[in-house]
Amino acid sequence: MKTIRVQDLSKSYQVADKQPGFAGTIQHFLNRKYRQIEAVKPLSFEIETGEIVGFLGANGAGKTTTLKMLTGLIYPSSGKVEVAGHEPFRRETAFLKKITLVMGQKQQLIWDLPAIDSLKVNAAVYGIEDKDFRLRLGELTEMLSLSEKLTQPVRKLSLGERMKVELLAALLHRPEVLFLDEPTLGLDVNAQSAVREFLKTYNERYAATILLTSHYMADITALCERVLLIHQGKLIYDGGLTGLLNQFAPYRAVRVELGRVYTQAELGHFGELEMLGEREVRFCVQREDLTRTVSQLLAELDVIDLSVADPPVEEVIGRVFQAGVVA
Figure (spheres, rainbow, N blue to C red):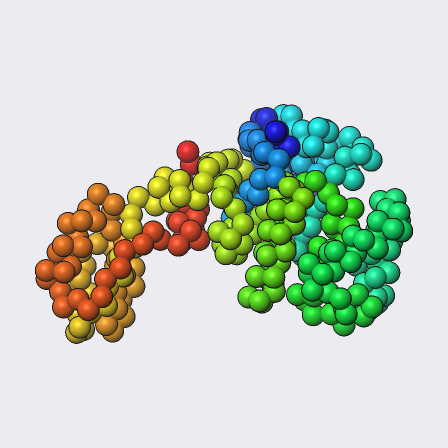
């Protein structure tokens, strides 16, 4: 069953085009000119119920704009979108009770009050009965390990604790669809891991559909089997992480531990030299050249250890954006 359907969705903005300086200001006042910015070019995709999908792209690629269209915060310039059986821009009460949007750089908690007070406000907004509120609060508090934190003023919580309470507040009405925009932004490694485990458990328990953006690739690799890759407002990839590597990284990372020190000149002909240490080097080798290159390395160098792996996902995506690759 499809929970999210997107067809040719796009968003353009008209912005004033002003030249710098005093003369530019006068000209702008007398004869204002505008230009169109395509924040999101027509894109189409579907997401199954219960699926966790990573939504990747560089800053300014159009990820947040897309999420805002999917949640009904902004009206699309063209195209169709359906989320949980609703058109988001209509902002129907039934729709709002089925979704949630969590943005890592935004907060909904009242800074000087205990977190429990903000949660009670959320419960009232969503019309949650007292009995259901207590049950859901207890369940989510246990899942997030927050039992002793909800009575403290929000300002006294650590960043990781605040993010956990933000998630609790966003999920109190038990939404079917989660739109998460950088939910682990700024958190330390332990807090990131705790948030990931919680999201995985919530997804398994309630079959929630999750669309997740993150610059931490550990979030994506831990939670998402499928990713959407957006570049300059255009969807350039929709598929599994393995397929992403095959399409955009036609090379393998070869790490070699050496028995003696070699110069860059002695190593350069084996492949693209990614890293040169005192006794350790790393090459990028085209997949079709891998067998021949490994044989040469073992035959010509004093090799203590050698390993072959796919390059890190974040490195692959970085290369895509740097090269401006489009499908």
